[in-house]
Length: 183
Length: 431
Image (cartoon, rainbow over all chains, first blue to last red):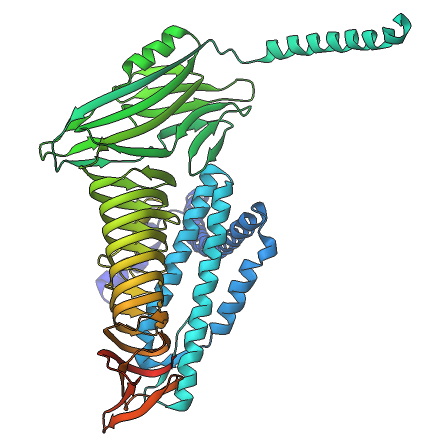
């Protein structure tokens, strides 16, 4: 044992600090607890916010989707157009065409018709905006009837052209592979 | 006698008192309309031959509304109704463009104002201005809406309609009702350009100059035109009695022309527009989703078409440069029909015995040609194509046949007419 160690041993009691004040200990413990709690709180808040965001997006998406459908249904009801069963006819034609396919080299021509469907959908949006701003006007009713007739004609035309292509494909098959038209 | 009429007199008296009471009540509850003034504004401008006139259509103004209100917006009128259904703003959307022999442009705007006092009504009418100015490029701009900037209306649960008109210079006038109607008279020789949208109706007089139309959701009722250049989108009623030369590109529109000289369809692109302030551009084709009805036309050229329906009465010459999924019907063809198309059905109800040439290149379509009886002509069909056909006339038989083509001679007499059908996967009938 060297002298330094001896000195430490002899003066051990003097070198040790006085007993810690319990208030100071309490303060340190509180600080540590607070810090831990804050971290936990932060994690919980992040989880809750994410969950809320996800739920909110889900409900918003559903609400917007439902609203769009409601608006269309309201529009048809307000103009007393239910008897024409336009939406049912459109849905039925869309359903029939959902799996329709044509030879790949004919696809470009059909895409032109699909763009025309989009053009008609935009037109319908314009009517919804108009009705929202101006109320239900009789002449818009006529234009909506005309719009649905054009859309149904277009879908029927697509159906007819697909049938025509398939008729000739059975007679004179081509080597081009078949692709869906994706309506 | 006296007793006989007594009950009726009593009943009349009773009815009279109820009517007076009702009348008084109505009088007290009526909104105060103190001054109703009307003024017609006219402006004239002398112009020379070849002048270009640009005009908008009477459109809806800027507006700001707070409270209860309703609109009646039709093709002919745009009306703003207040809280109790009172008409507060009336915009006549029918635009009459008349023509005359004078070298003058004349704009007439009729304005009617209801205000709380004649002074207010007069002050507003004094501030309204109509201007016809010659631009630096020699054109004339016509604004149907004068210097009117905005119409404001406020009402509440316990307050009636509070309306005011704001002019371009910022001056504000309190009104009860404001009505406006515009009309234009132009020289017959003028070139007119009209841009219209928002469901308007235009009536046009005869015009010797060029009419340039750029329209969306607008109806047009025209008479006799020398030259038309039209770009139409969603115009469901476009009528002309007579056009010498027309160039029309359209999307989802209905066009009807009585007699036409030269018609060119689908040269330019349409299908652009704005929805809720956002521009969109859908250009499936130059010309698409239209119905064209032309009673008689000398020369019609379809430049680029998709999913259009063409119904022509009497046609001398018809040329289709490019058409896909369209439908062509001709009642009577006299000279030529040259077609390059895909998936386009063709039906000619009568081909004149004097016809010169019918040349059809097509795929996946049904073609019917009814050639007049006693016609003499040659028919050529490439053999490489798959076709299902009926030849119901008295075909003399195969004139010649080789690896590429089959030719028939039809009729026993002399005839220079030639039908060439290059159509793969088609059904055709020749009667």
